[in-house]
Length: 198
Image 1 (cartoon, rainbow, N blue to C red):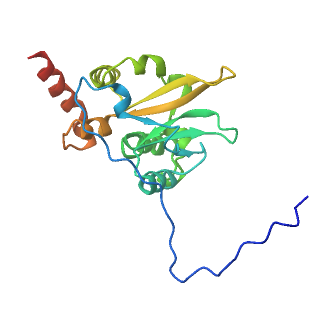
Image 2 (cartoon, helix red, strand yellow):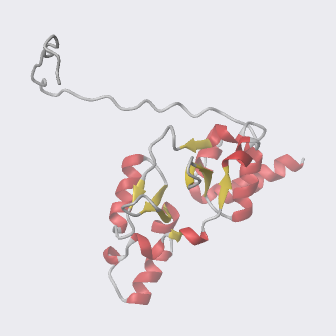
Image 3 (cartoon, rainbow, N blue to C red):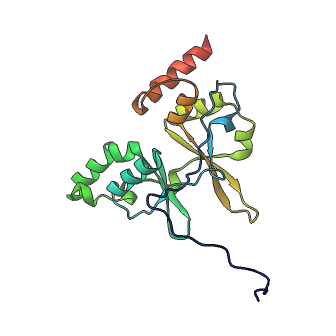
């Protein structure tokens, strides 16, 4: 029941060309290989996860990546269960053309489910291990797996595994102060490793 002493708030019309606020992204902090690994992790408790459904077309994937300035999307179903991950390497690489050739379909008919890395092939890192790790450990892990991204998980209060964060090779090299593109990341990791050895 609404109390009688509550008065309505003053209302007005929205002005022409009114705009809106956007969340301020914290600038990426420069790091070195001895910095805490959490300094280069995208924390999904602070940044909204970008997801897409398995039946989306690749044009929708590319648009979502551009709109959100990310290079990977979590693939999830309507219950928010993770089905896999799709990256810009997947969409721009050989996978779509291979599907086109094998199935005799048009490029526009290739779906996320056709080229994503499925959940059962995803290896994840535990948040507790990441908390104790340094950037160099993450670089070594990405280099060893040959992947551009690594997912970090923790359990919620019911014991359900939840993706807590994402490591991105391109973000790490930017935070290390190196200007490169995604295709150069593997060789850059090799250069970092060589520098560590000397």
